[in-house]
Length: 86
Image (cartoon, rainbow, N blue to C red; front, side, top):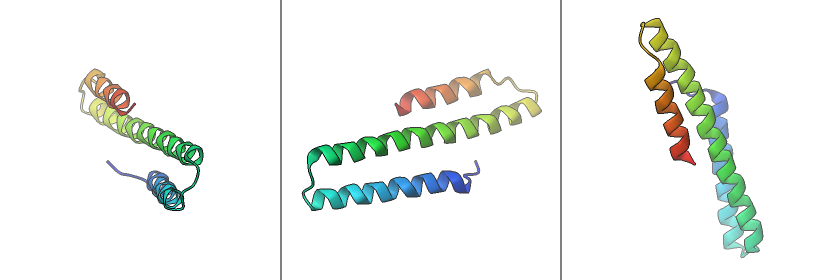
């Protein structure tokens, strides 16, 4: 799979958010602020998983179709990945 710049930038942003959260914890910030930021990271990770799975699904379905293979299993596998990530 090819991970494009947009996907990598998403992960870099998440990394930055996590560093910020660690800094907040070290500074003794209010737990509500920390939890808010952790929730934002969780949402960002979920969206990134969705982007990666959907991109991979498109590539896999196109490849399977090109090779005359059934795409049902590929789609089921992608859905299972999304479900597991929640």
